[in-house]
Image (cartoon, rainbow, N blue to C red):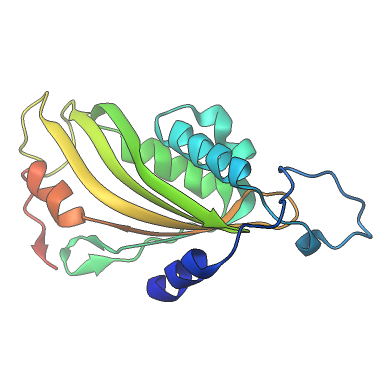
Length: 184
């Protein structure tokens, strides 16, 4: 699936003069007739980074109310647990919970690119552990870094993120936190 999306992104041409998003349109105008600009791709990635850095005010400027986040499964000691995020409230809670135990939790943009309503974002999480995560044996102040890629599908009417397919190096994350993840 990721290969197909990345191939589509790489093969798509951005030579047309796309319109900057968001666009205010009448309900009689089909949203999909407007291209999403590379400048809006930059804005949406920046907003996504700000949201994950703790600037929660960016939520409604970044994602649709019914955002769907598809992510790697979390180990739970008895196998793994699926992650189900299907609205902006659940995403907001997930962001808050993900930031717990860290005094720094930010995503550095390694690269991003897009074509129309698809955006690929390669990132590195840079965090400083503050303690308190169940099962983590890392010391307070331990620097935690791991990599990932988010494939975002933007809503053609609003330009906001409607879906994110996220893949990250959780093995490194859990290893750096010195967590026993049991059976995976």
